[in-house]
Image (tube, rainbow, N blue to C red):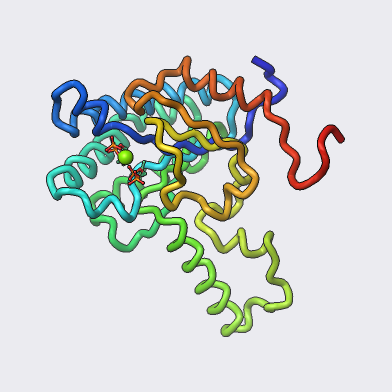
Length: 238
Ligand code: IPE
Ligand code: IPE
Ligand code: MG
């Protein structure tokens, strides 16, 4: 692997937990539990490779439509994982962040996110960005609302609105845009994830369901990214 060409920011749509379990005649929830193990493995590889930001699509605003039992299991699993892994996050110098709408997240879950984010806030290694109760369209609307409010309050001049200043109104404020988007489970869609930020990202679709997406598969995705030619609208080879 070319150590000079490591993507700064990788975003992952961790999909296929349910199908992974169903194919094994297990309850969908078992797939989520197995998926958590892969998160730990992928985070380790990201740290090892020196990736700066890893954004994981953990729970979308649309995922509230799922059966209550699955949703409450997911809430419990994420809280437990954040709590159990906090020592590991400190050991690996990882800073945990949360992107998504705070309104609508159950209080105890939000508290756990805030506790872990605060604990790790001074860490200087990998930024592990968890998209939770996340919807990209909502994020953009929240950004527009912020701009309008700032203009009304006289804190922002509409003349200064450009891509850079608008990016600062998004949940991902201060982070570089993703270089690489990975989606597992063979689905090839974006499902309301980082619509603004993915403008020039490279896309990689893996056939494996998330619980089968090993560190080795992750390295394969990075290696493939390294062979892509990014043009940003320019002509090739300059
Ligand atoms: C991804 O796996 C995890 C979440 C969305 C929380 P899914 O639960 O979407 O698994 P499939 O797509 O139904 O197989
Ligand atoms: C996207 O996966 C959300 C997460 C991985 C958290 P979904 O499984 O919810 O997406 P769709 O419904 O297949 O588009
Ligand atoms: Mg899915």
